[in-house]
Image (tube, rainbow, N blue to C red; front, side, top):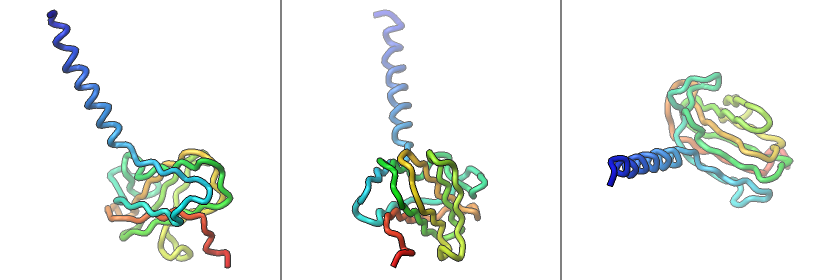
Length: 145
């Protein structure tokens, strides 16, 4: 066997481990279809991160990715967390930073028409903390009687 044959195995193993590590680091993807169940869909994680942004401190990678299969007339995202949570949304319609306010009961909340596509969600914290969060995804409009 030539010396170069011995190098193939360690190199292949290194590539395999590198790509496996990248796959494990990806944010989970949630499929959002019309009339999904249960409603609300609830996802949990940890807010904040080391990366400073105009939407608080966020993680380097999205906390969550949602794939909207077809345009929805109404979808609402709401985050509950200790600290000063924020919600950064990057999607086909643009980039949106949502801060908690008195109208949303201190929770970052974003609602309205959602175009089909992939959305990266970052749950940040304005006070540089990291806290457990609950992200609720719903098609129910709370303002309608």
